[in-house]
Amino acid sequence: MSVYTKRFVANNNVGAWQELVAVPAGETWIVRDVELVNGGTTVAAQMQLSLQGSGGSSIWLSALTVPIQGHVQWEGRVALNPGDQIWGTSSAGQGNLTITGYTFPATP
Image 1 (tube, rainbow, N blue to C red):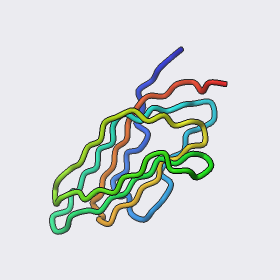
Image 2 (cartoon, rainbow, N blue to C red):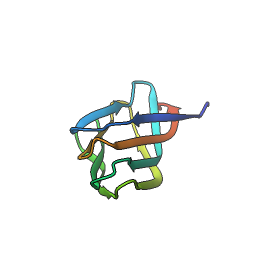
Image 3 (tube, rainbow, N blue to C red):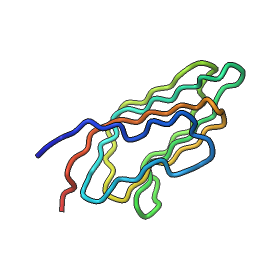
Image 4 (cartoon, helix red, strand yellow):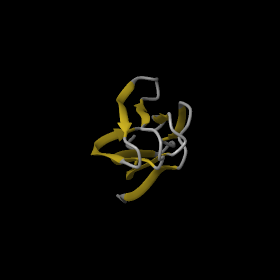
């Protein structure tokens, strides 16, 4: 079985609440690292992330305040199956988001 490191999301302006990416058929993802950066110089960024099951259930939800020119990092292990989604929003135009992890072939 092959395991690949993958960047799931690299977004320089998260903006309004939106689906950022969905796990494609045939893959299982393990989210390992989430990095939120506020490059703004005047306001703290309010950022929210949600990992959602294909039926809309919340697997993981986080609401964070990222200080001016600061960052927040999360590290862990959350499994996402085919059809699961990563959603996000940011109140600041400088809200940068990177999410990385591993991708595996989906189990039948």
